[in-house]
Image (cartoon, rainbow, N blue to C red):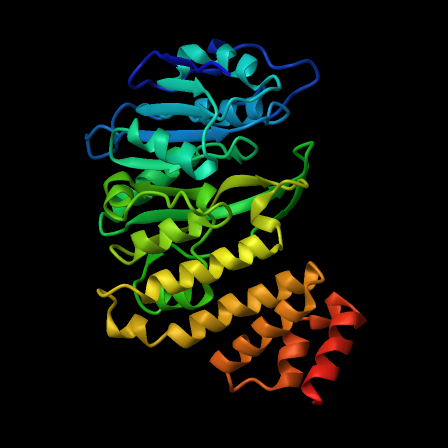
Length: 358
């Protein structure tokens, strides 16, 4: 497919609802017929709002991408650079992107090497102080960018800010909210210890990152397909800690292709890779080095559940044993109960019983 691209504007004040194309028939509410509050040109202290670069990687998400685009453009933010990197979609994605071309700093549509590659392509074209990528099936909440930017300004010692998430279905009906809530705080320890040992960072689409730290940390690892977000956020956090805010910043869309909810062997492998990457570093503080066994146990725990779901029972058993090896204080019975091995069904349990009785 030939490359399609367009460079239009460097930075813009977010358009108003009346500036944008009319929504499709039958669409209403945010971000179709509602918009965020207009943010003043200057912050309360008189300084200009910092520039935010948002990158949307996409591929054949024509069903959702218009809602996603509008949720970015209708933020009311006064200093936005919005970039869309499409992987050569064959559906109606490009047609939709062209509808919103006047408000895009840059867009392109050509085959790429996957989502991580697309994010890095967009990052290279990003400017300003703050950065994030916004998935083409997710939806920012009203006033999300201004709220997160204000938190980053308030906490200049933070590497990124992370808000909460809401779950929506394919029709944008709300299913529930985030599992975890944070107060407004910046903590390096024990928060970073908890992040490392659990391989959890907060929800990336609800984040805003210090762009220079994303680059300093090495950009997005293009070899990762499922947890490149966790990987880069952990690498940023090891430079500067995050600040978590008690604000719902984004809506995660639940559908059969939602990567962050998939339990499969490749995602399991990537969690082990990320865990090992952390402890192969030479610059880790001693407080983090002590977490190696706990972190590897977390990675292998996730792996045996994934391999069990895939009915790859020998590999499931291998990772279960590694989980227990790295966390020997937990008994077999407790492990089976706490991590719900029963969900894998009797074949796995039967195999484990036969193996461990030898």
